[in-house]
Image 1 (cartoon, rainbow, N blue to C red):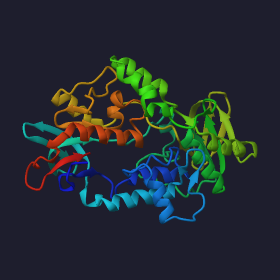
Image 2: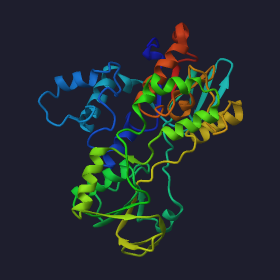
Image 3: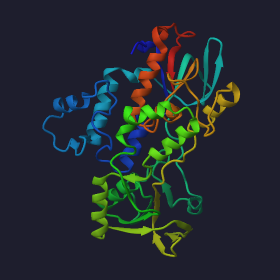
Image 4: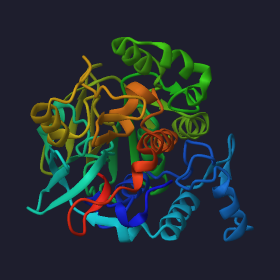
Length: 381
């Protein structure tokens, strides 16, 4: 865009950029992405294919049908190449923001370690909640129940022989298949029938087919309803579902339908009781129950709403303009921007659209002088 790199700082708590993405995708055993090859971090939609034809020429299995979905290894290598080409590590400030104070001449970002950052503007790109969704019964067997997306989950390789995976979506399916490959006795507990969908929302939401009507809708309550109805939450794409059903038919994965009614943990195992009355004894329970539907950002976002009076809709999400401005100095992306971006706001395509909108709204003033000695102009959080 038009923002000089020396006016940008990326505040991220992990040692390296994309560390959380990589930990989660590797944990569940992802082999290929769900999204098409044109959805990646580079600026050229065909850049991932060009990269594959260069450094990865002749390697088999780089793209999976349909839609040329890239292998995770290829996608991550391309991410590294993009990050290196733009020297993004030099912009990375390791830290976690706890609050933002809006002043007349900038934004004061307080960090958890006691330090602070001064910026002219901030972009809140906070992603899903740090802590995943835990069912109430999961606390009854501490030490034997783990969520796949808990921060710094280090359960692999599992020492347990028998494992119960709880969940019915793509993450549960991928994790169960990984466990089978690694020789575990696998039980998959799903409360609903498998929902087969290629993507987490219809591709029509990426363009005018559906977004034109969404943009015309003035009621934010109705927009929230449209987003909820459009999401294929807890779904599994056809190729993974075929592999999963083959493992179930072959007896490698034992499928149980129903809700978990309770757990009883002993020294050597955990006893799982289902709402159907069935009982199951396993060494470990792995949760693939995703994240809650609450607004992300935690106290950082709550503080902006409380202290700065930034507006929210009835569903609790920010009310922003078409440039994703929540305040003249505060922009949002991802889930925080979905009342403008629609149901694809949380994925890679949504991030690209966020960047385009923010750049347009910054206009020629995007190269304004940074605030404070050594400060950066735009600090995506």
